[in-house]
Length: 275
Image (cartoon, rainbow, N blue to C red; front, side, top):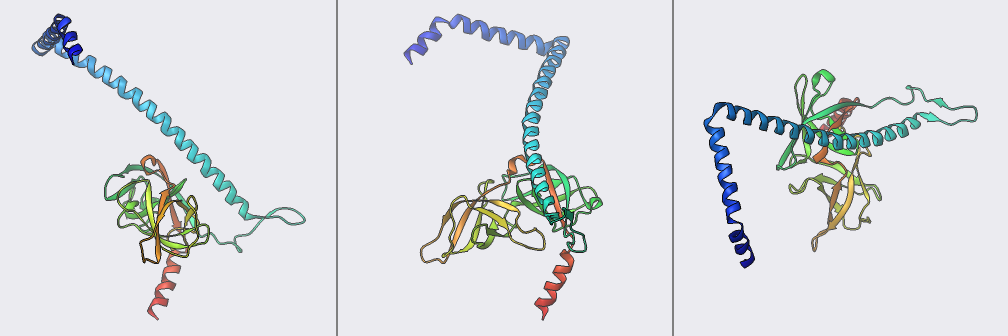
C-alpha cells in the first residue's frame, strides 16, 4: 500500500496531465461539430473493423465444428447405405423396395434462434409446412437428439428443446436395454436425467444411451453417455445423469424426421387402447 502511495506521489504530475488532456479532448469534441463528427466516424469505423474481425473469427471456428459434424454425419450415412446391400455368391445387389419399405425421411434445417439458459427452451428453424414439416416430428443433430416440433408456419417451425420441462422421451441403455424416461433437470444444458432404471440394472459410467422405438424418434438415435448414477435409500429405481451428445450451445444445422408410417401406427395403437 505504501509503495502504491509513493508511486502516485512521484508521478502525480503525469497523471494530472493525462486527466487534463482527456478533459480537453472531450470538451473539444463535445463543443465542435466538425471534430465531434470526425471522432464519431472514426470510432464507428474502428468498432466496425473490430466487429468484422470478431465475426470472421467466430465464423471460422463455427465452420470448423460444422464441417466436423458434417463429416461425422456423412460417415454415418455411408454406413447406413451398406445396409441396403446383400453379399451373395455371384455379386452384390440392391435389395428392392418391395422388401424394405422406407419409413423415415430427413429434412435438413438451419437453427436461426436457440435458447439454453431458460427453464423452457425452444429453437426456431428456417423450414416449415412448405417443406413438409408438421408438429410432433422429431428433430436431431448430427450428434444426437434435439427436440420435437411444436408449432409450424409456412416457412418456419418452433421446436421444444430437450432442455425443456415439457420434453420427455423414452430412452434405453445400449448395454442391457434398460428403459427409462429422459428429462431435463433445468440446470445444466450439457446434462439430462434418465429415470426409472431398475435397481438390478447393470451399467457402467460411459455407457451409451439411445432412443427407444416410438412414433416420433427412430430407434437407436444417440442421446448421450452415462455420467453418474444415484439411488435413494429404499428406492427400487436408479436415476442416471446423462451427458448429452448434442452441444446445444453450438447448434447450426439439424434434421427434422418424418415418420412416414406414424399415422398408421398411432391409429392402430389408439384402436387397441379403446378395446
